[in-house]
Image (tube, rainbow, N blue to C red; front, side, top):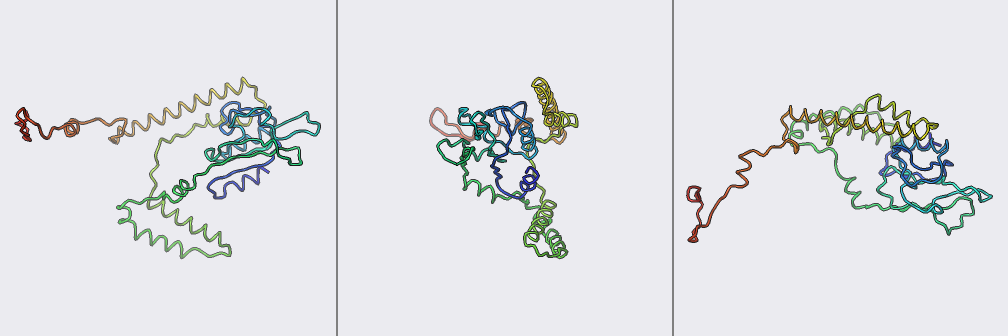
Length: 288
């Protein structure tokens, strides 16, 4: 099942929502699992840990665990004798902001030992349409004048060498890939924000934290603290590096921008003055 989902999820889509019976008890959140919210139910089992590992690897969120409900509104499956109740039916997505609520519907006869799980979504179509139409490649005037002819020539060469296939989807994908490749070559995107890479040691600790399902709570807490400490160090190193680069390149960023005397006087310079007899003077010597 997880192999099929891992194959389907990379397919291009605006949002990904996965729903169904996973026969896994995820339980409550432990440690730094970003895919699990603070409002879980029950105790995690081995299949639950497998599901959590899958969510972490695919960047998905278990939406059932992000909304606080009474225990009787959390369980989704009941055994035939009525003694066991577990939460094994889930809603998952790669974008938490589109969900407003996930809850069990009590008064609904499904003729099954599973209860209906309802997810409420709110998608601003106007806003999302604007985001989809927004271009990520915006060439400057210099790039347009300098590389326009070369860009067209490169595209022509690529399209002439492109062999058609019997699959229209594959042909379309090939055209899109060529446009993206050449577009990124001539109009490089400007990335914002500070990027930093985690060290091998940090990645190893995070991997051990995810894969060790038999770790005790004290061991999990110790690893969690260690991961947070290593991430803080990596972020601090990245910020320090960015500061030194900004100083070396003489960038007037918000952090290092110093108000020069000329700018300060230019903004506060007095242009005219009314004297005691009502006369307006504009000469600097008269105003002084």
